[in-house]
Length: 290
Image 1: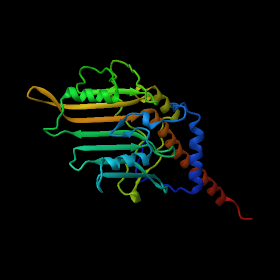
Image 2: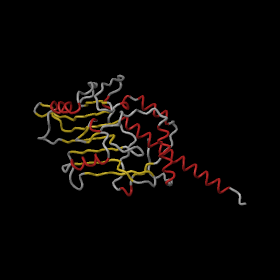
Image 3: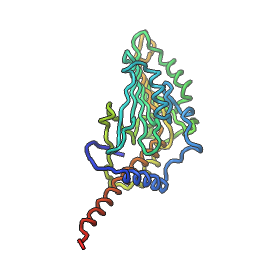
Image 4: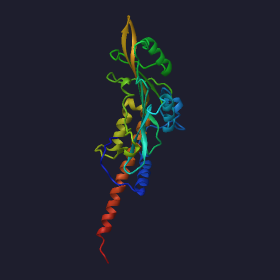
């Protein structure tokens, strides 16, 4: 879903109610990735520093505050629909020395908000740089056996899971790599620091029918699983390969699809309801006076 700032349109309580109802109704007609029976269990999905994919806003915020204590350690950002309430769309945490940075992205309403994307950047200064072998072993202990990747992709590791947290083996065409999957995020908004001036998300009509776009997403191997990617930046000290930076990306792709489609349908429903209300107002104005 694409978003922009500044395309304003009025929303009444009736339009909001109609938009959410249409989103729920239309979502039933699309072939979306099915959620696990009983819903997601965030504790079974992969995590970075205790931030699990599938967590609620409150759960993610609590962990972030424990990881980055202090008034400036955690920065929530906000988004909103036109004339609607603000919501937390992303949370950034940074350590006091700036060496550890964690960004958490949450899905947009109307579906319940959950963590769908996590990015961690860890800078390791001289004297605190682990060997590459020990770092790889640690990552495998945490996420399991990584997927095979092309030899040319040095320093890149990838893992794939189903939505119940079980590792899956994924194979694709020769020009495809699972290391590309976790970084791709859609249906989320970075937001603004102040909830009073939150990033406004508006509907931008697309010439491609939503059913066709969903079919394209479903066919993409990256969108069928939960992915983790780790990128290691290494150097050499006295002939030993050491790691000076680590980037970790987590993406809950099927959940992204479900939530992105629901938000796009909601916005389309609001726009449609507004157009119908304008038509009714125009017809009433044209009625003859008796």
